Length: 344
Image (cartoon, rainbow, N blue to C red; front, side, top):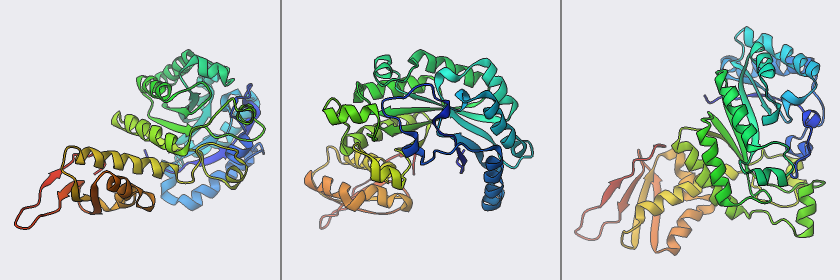
């Protein structure tokens, strides 16, 4: 279901490890541990701002390993949020955590307080990559925790990263395949960004680590987006959430404030190339639903420029479906074909 979440950021207090890439202060923009009253205040504010839409939203505890924080503190936050779920004000509670911080006892507690979605920060399904980056858990633990969550009837979310030290595009695609076999309802994909005061920063500055370029990350993540959507697995985020702190302090890596838009645009380029494959070079017009016009053309009409260099002079206009029209020669008819696209 598509809805806004009421985000409550719980900082790095629960995680027993310091991963190579991690600086939760920059990633979330938060260092303050929320109080139960602040959870209630956030819920009340959301009720007034969202109105009837609040009933489809979840109260979401993000930013740290929620199930690894102090038990009494965790329970106090859940107790603050739960009455709003009981009363039907919100659809449920969402949280993110580590695969090795899930147990039957913890799931008992989460279910008792109205939890509806659990996201696991898996990052990779390659044990060598996990070890190199100090994750402190294994791919097998991701599988075990995922199955336990699904067995409780909870929605499962999985988070992966691309461009980690020791990983490859083929490895990322393998992680995506492993994710699909666990049948999550949703995934998040984060290209690796180098943040200051991290192990990754030290590796980058010594020349031991080279991050993905923006072009490489867009190409790979566009493939991953296509892979998951073909399997009815929603990609609910592509790239880190933009913040002034992240933009100013990041050292390197494929960050862009509209990263998902770049990936969606790359998918449209692939579709158009597929449609044009085997056809004579020349002038063509694509029609696409109006809401996809910008993505199909690409940022600064980049997709049209790429096709131009390949010998296809392309225009993109609004239409009721994704279609390809061959520019008519004198005394000839238009050649039309329709591409059966799930987005149209």
